[in-house]
Length: 478
Image 1 (cartoon, rainbow, N blue to C red):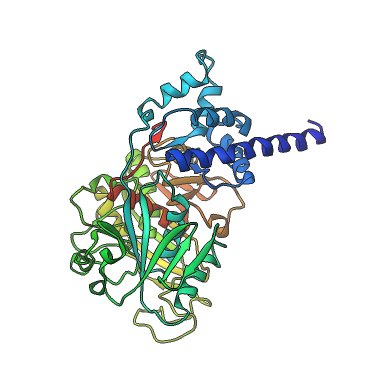
Image 2 (image 1 turned 90 degrees about the vertical axis):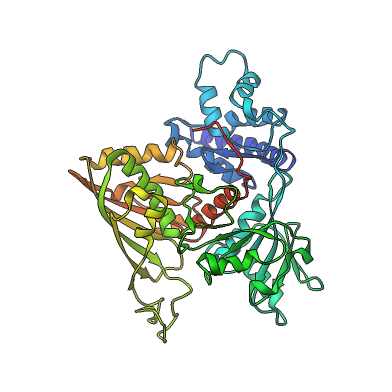
């Protein structure tokens, strides 16, 4: 191919992607239809992001896919009477353009593939959401909920509860949402309303409520009713403590963004979300590490059987550690997080059993905190019931990442150049590093990257949708 042809192809892709962008917004804002491309969300994506998303098609199908091939499908989708849903246009385009039997045309193909979603009268009632706490996870949850906000998206972020209330507090809260040292600037507009103590984010009015405990809050005063309270403070982790939220007027359910204690159901979305029942009022979304390792462990256990294993987590430092040496109630955590590798304990390995009972008593775990602000790695050293080679294991996990019910939780990379900063912003629970996989006889060692902030927050949002009964179906189903 001539040098000029490369530039011409790029410009053609730009033109088609620029045509795709407003159609994505039209489908999402007017119909509540979220467009994906092999699991990657395209809503609010830039022109270059859309092109890059198409480039990874070869990883999934072995064949290239261009914006010119998905554009006509997306154009046709705007003309169909669709109910709110998620549509993977990458999978549909791949199937359509590679099926020589599609003689009835694109419209008929889409109507057949999406027949269950062809009812524009279906809709889901909007549900109020309150974030109790506004730290690292709270702010990322706010970003995700705002990103998804639209006529068709049922979860509405109505309020954020924080301590404080001193002069300048509102501006500082807005600034922390606007600027993030790890995840970059917020994609949108943020203004404040001092008189009403609120921030307006991309047109979403979010009440800031100052309170030192749930008992001080009456959400109905702010027009909030039957709300899901997402507690990301970690102060209360048992039913007794979290029930304080349910005593507040205007609340109906509570989701904890930390491992729950006692009889609280710990949910890893993609693995055991089916345990969430309509009558459940308190649920835990487990921990970032449990979410990262459980889907991979389930996949391995389903095919090869896990006899026993040890999970070592290499985890970025967190806010509960000291920046410089100082007193800390926890062992070793008083030493400077920015200067030391800190050996500490983790309950994530044992917590796997709450989401995957068949692994109860089979796993041990430890954690090493390291001087990086985000992205962690779990090293799973497993003894299996069956023999396996590294090539076989990688092929299996690659397939699970691409074409399985766990594809939304597991990703796979075989790049020899990936480092932790490349995983920042990953929307999956964990990314298997295939290059590092070790296997001999019935033993294997798997290396699993995970964005312990953003990837985990995406899992929390999935749990929120499941808990409130507003989880949209994805087409085509896997």
